[in-house]
Image (cartoon, rainbow, N blue to C red; front, side, top):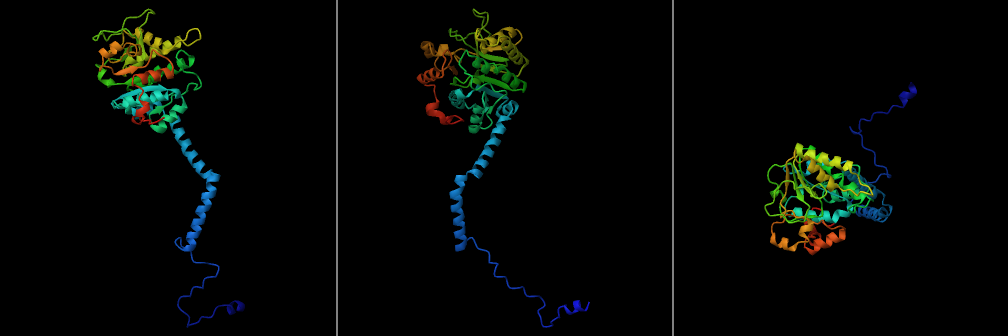
Length: 357
């Protein structure tokens, strides 16, 4: 106890009321200002080190960019047809095409022509492979969707091949789903070019609108009823340009089309395609569905427009959609379009929402 008392500090009445802070130790320095000469030297040194070593390591940059890319790809992989249709629909209408990667130049050409008619915002690209899905959404976010499962991207899409059948046979399912969502839907193949506003010709409130695939010249005031069957017992309506309203009649045609495709699958002996099945569906529902044949002068088949120049001159100014069919092969189609001044991507790619591909 006495030892403890002897160690107690003695009060000095002459000391300050508040204790004086001890002098800083020599081991502590004043903070260096970034604007001081020393601070600037340190900052420049760090910049040099990062500039030299960061590009070589590549780790932080690549990890960051890969993370963003993976997030973006995941978003479009999970994008649904319902979400896509809701995004693009204008006035309750969606314009649909189905595209695989080899057809991207034709998609761009078609889009330029639609943009000139101010209907591009309604366009939904149904991508048939992930490369197309990502490319379109990279350039034009939200305007492409893939409906799983994706067809084999390595399978050839040459007309008459099994790959072509697999590619086109998915079409009525996509269209039916959009109708079930309550939208009007227009389908186009992308080997088409718009020269006018298609919607001006969709008169009345019919269930299904379509075009004749025959090259025989019709009178200007021809009937809009379904034409009579040809030699094979069915009509020759084109399945590449269709407009459907979300009615029970239009849905019935799509369901019949799906059933016909299932009943007549592709084989080496019988190289089926989607168009005969579409015609059988129209023929079998004709008494129950309100069908409308669009005017030939506005919607000529390629077999007429590209092969009957007399008719083309006589009907000049009335053409609305030109279909580059009655010919197969990418290069042949491109050459034909170029020869007629309809290959727009060479000089007008900036008019496309996709720009240069």
